[in-house]
Image 1: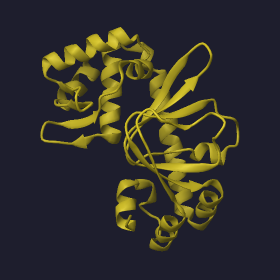
Image 2: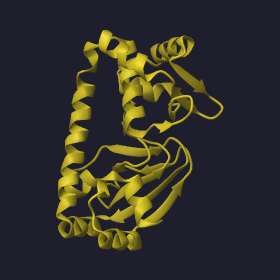
Image 3: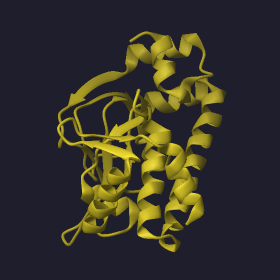
Image 4: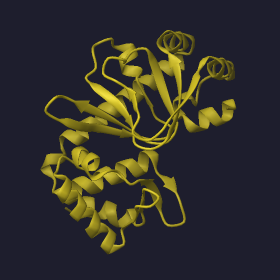
Length: 227
C-alpha cells in the first residue's frame, strides 16, 4: 500500500510525516478474515493495534448468559489502541461481520510511533474523545422512541463509514440483533422499523448483497430532530 493511500483511508495519520508513514508500512502485518471469524478474543487484547482497510466488524461482550453487540466499526477505523495504552483487562471480542482486510502494528511499535510523532498523540486523544462522545450519545438513547434510536444508529454508521453511491449512502445491512443491541430495543422492533423506513423509500435494503442504502438522509435527519 502506498503512503498516500494509507493516510487517505486512515485520517488518524493525516499529519504524520512521510518518513513515519514509510516506516509504518514496513512494520505492519496484513491479515484477511472471512465473515464470522473471531478476530480477537477477550484474552488477546493489548498485543497490537488494528486498522480496518476494508469490511465491517463488531465488538461484542459475551458471557455464559448473554451476548451483546457494543459497537460496529467500518473501513478507516481502528481498534485495540485503548488496550495498548491502558492495560486493564477487556471483556469484549471482535467478530468479522463481513470479509475484512486488516493491518496491525505491534503494541511496542505503536507506542514507539506515538513518541516519534507528537501530532499522533493529539490525534489519538481526539479519537478517544470521539469514542467517549459516541458512547455518551448511546447512553442518552433511551429517552427517544424506538424508531428514532434505529434511525440515529443508521445515520451514525452512514456518517462514519458510509460509501456514497448514486442512490445514497451505503452501509452494511446489519443483522437485526446487532442493530437492536446498538439501539437498545428488541430485534422484532428493529425489523418492523426497517420495513417501515424501506416502505417510505427512505432506505433501500438489498439482502442479496447485504447492503442498506440511506436514500433520503435529509428526511431521516428531519425525523430525528422532529421526534
